[in-house]
Amino acid sequence: DEYLPPEAENLHSIPYPTVLSGMDAIDVQAWQDAVVASTRTMLASGMWGMHGLASTIEMRRVLTKQCQHSSRCSFKDLAYDPETGNTEAVMQEMLQSTFCLQPTGDSISRKGLVDSIVAGCIPVLFNPLQAKLWPWHIGPWEDVAVVMEVVPGDVMGALAQVPAQELARLRGNMARLLERLVYSPPG
Image: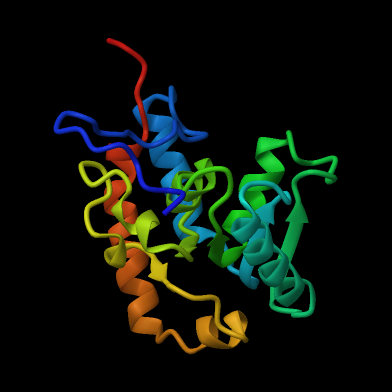
């Protein structure tokens, strides 16, 4: 598989720094309160550009089309959107969405995976290798994400079927990960 990492006993990856990394505990708590209070007006959001392996680009095309054809999904093309570099706009998008679509790109890991967790936006994974990322920090991805090993013909329909109690379970588990994912300043 094109994404298989090198095998080494002492090789462990760590999550990307989040937008909260470097904040003090008071600011992180204020963020967490804002996440809990946020109104999720969109079922899902997707933010990516068209790059990566051929299989990745095709998956992103399918997901882009589904998202753009649904009133319940918001899509931003990170290659062309002027807000791409605007961290606040990207995080606002995540705060308004119940699910964040996270297709693979140049690699199986994406910064958006970590940012979606700290925004309380349930990641939707589309490659089984994504569910093996960062075990020391995340644990079982099934506790914080929806894992779809194939892209269904109606992603929005599948996500709309996730019961409210499952949404609450996933969000509660994500909230408990916040301290593991926010790298604090030294001292």
